[in-house]
Image (cartoon, rainbow, N blue to C red):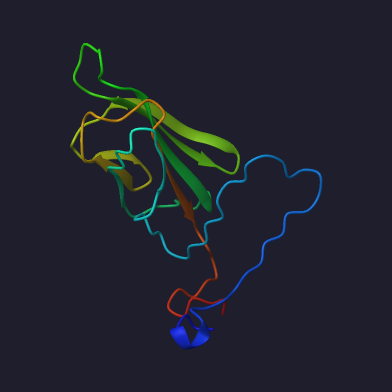
Length: 149
């Protein structure tokens, strides 16, 4: 289908996991044909889901799949400074590409390859709050029709 309601909103895919290598929790299956940064996965303890990913991903001729993860590693409760801290990582098919730690601020913070983040609050997060944004480059996908040529 072409993605309209008459076509039941497009294609249907079935994913089967077979064999002895599938164990434990599976990561969510995310299928996107554009660099939609508006729906990162949030796995939080505090319930304060206030992180926004921004920008346009620049693959720079490199990885077709990149995962950005932002995780709160220190909250301001009982700390000397009034900010929560986070660690961000950029991971590709061959493992971690970049990682850094910083204070949570209200300013837009550049990470890498055209992607930045912005928090809505500097405090109130809990250690372990985590956001994951998966970026998948789909060469050969016609995004105007949402189908392969």
